[in-house]
Amino acid sequence: QIHVIIVPTLLDDDDDPELTTVESVADDIAAGLAPGDLVIAESTLPPGTCRDVLEPHLASESGLEPDEFGLAFCPERTSSGTALRDIRGQYPKVVGGVDPESTRAAAVVYNELSENEVHPVSDATTAEAVKVFEGIYRDVNIGLANELGLLADELDISTREAMDTANELPMCQLHDPGPGVGGHCIPYYPHFLLGRTDEPMAVTETARRVNDEMPSIVVDRLERELARADIDIADASVVVLGVTYRPGVEETRASPALGVIDDLLERGADVAGVDPLVDPADYGARPVTIEELSEEAFDAAVIVTPHEAFDRIDWGVLEPMVVVDGRDAVDLSGTVHREYDLAGSSDGRPPRGSRDRDDDSDLDGAERDDAEGNGTERDTSAATSASTDGGSDV
Image (cartoon, rainbow, N blue to C red; front, side, top):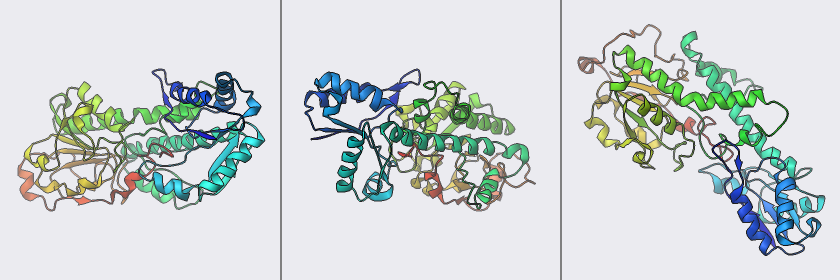
């Protein structure tokens, strides 16, 4: 028989890997484990878990010797929203067993079940490291992109444009900056090694801290832009656009929007939220529909996750407001709104728009009569990039 473990591996309150669900499934498997069976773990695990935790656990609970059953780690490599495509053959299937026979058996299984190329590695710990390293690479790269993105104000350029242009060199693969990292993968996997190794991991730790801080930095930027319009954030009404961590995906785990909402509430703002997939009220924000946006006078909007449905927003009929765009999702040039584009725009506009803009302009209703156009929606397909993703999840 073949037994597969594929359940979430999350973190406890101390950011340590929470393996109780995995161990519970292992208990169920052990109750029926027979000589010759193969156990496959697809859940992302800290390197060494199969060897040091699962194999002894299965042997102890089943009464079998470790060499009487097989155990291999074969990580799922899928992204939220594209799981079926990924399973059918998008990426090579990594397999690694606690012994050579387990590796061989797992490779045979996946060669039969999947169209994916099967890539055996030396052992289960190596296979576990493959999956964790993938997530750490992305987290570190996003952290670097976010750090560089924050230089846009000081340099008075679009660092987003600079990074896009730098990526024309094949050896440069900077990710997109954004308001943080969400999902059930990327924010978690660095902790599968941080604090569990003797070797310091300063780069990984710094990147995780940078990404964790991004929602608060977004609110800092909003507070500053509101102050430029003589509005105290404690008196402001703010609408958060997008609560899920990624466009088109009904998942909010570790979503940057949750940090943005919490921080806004802590600073005294009245917070509303718009999301086509989840109820913002479940996360502390007063729910508002896209159609209802024009019925209220908000002081500010924060674009965290640009769902495709937001293309229907007619910015031209909304009351003047400060708009902090965390994803370069819209171009509000020529409208009554005061736009702040985190890291600038991909077409070269610095965070506050054109360099000769009057930053002290009012946001009063008189500007509405002089404004032209409703704002230009940008291609939001970039919102599915690494900054939004939760792992090779995203």
